[in-house]
Amino acid sequence: MGMGMLVRAGRLLGHWLLPQTCAHCREDLNPDWSDPLCGPCRAGLPQARPSFCLRCAEPVREAGEFCRDCSGGAFACSLIRAAFLYQGPVPGLVHAFKYRGRRRAAEAAGRWMACLLPGLPELSGHDAAAPVPLHPRRLRERGYNQARLLALQVGAAAGLPVLDLLARVKPTRPQWGLGRDARAQNLAAAFQAGPAARGLSVLLVDDVCTSGASLESCAAALRRAGARRVGAFVFARQTLQPSEN
Image 1 (spheres, rainbow, N blue to C red):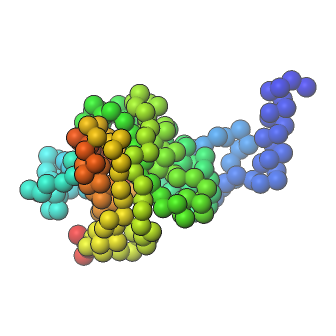
Image 2 (cartoon, rainbow, N blue to C red; image 1 turned 45 degrees about the horizontal axis):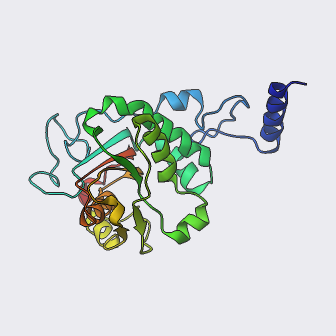
Image 3 (spheres, rainbow, N blue to C red; image 1 turned 90 degrees about the vertical axis):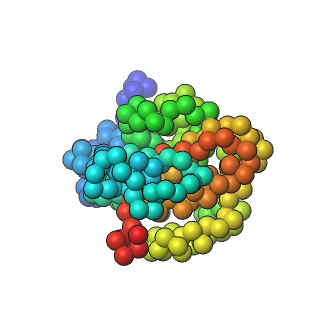
């Protein structure tokens, strides 16, 4: 039996012992299928397209506009772009790699982000990619930082080193379910950056942006440490309910 046949036999045995299902629709996946989503769900990923806020990628009515929160403001994170909208198969995929231990789902999400990066020339010109960090306790629980897995794929596609420039020094509540002001308060002084950030233009990478509070808090820490510019690229853009905007 050749090496290829042995690998396939091992894959089939693993699939029989622990069948892999689509992260969204939960249909069984073919043992030879490497993606965490089935074909139809993969095709249904909603790409983030204009019209969105020129700064934060929040959907807006007309192209070339800023959203209400970004209009006329000054931000440490100067630009946020997203690969997809937090709709359709995206929530299930994100839940799979954040809460169901499906590390390969994050790696696939990073590859899909990397594929869309050439269509976002405004994100070019950075010196390094930096993942949004987890608190050490959360990292021990999860076993990996999903943002770093995304950043490794994005960095490889963009030719950027992936640097762990940030530390999360304060445990925080999960951001979901919090309004915009509560999100910002929850993240106050949560991140620190060291001197390695000095003089760099940094591309932050994370899984989901809702209000942008996490990215802004990270960017502020980087700027305090001497970074000259900070932008962000996320897997998915979620929109707060209108009452919370």
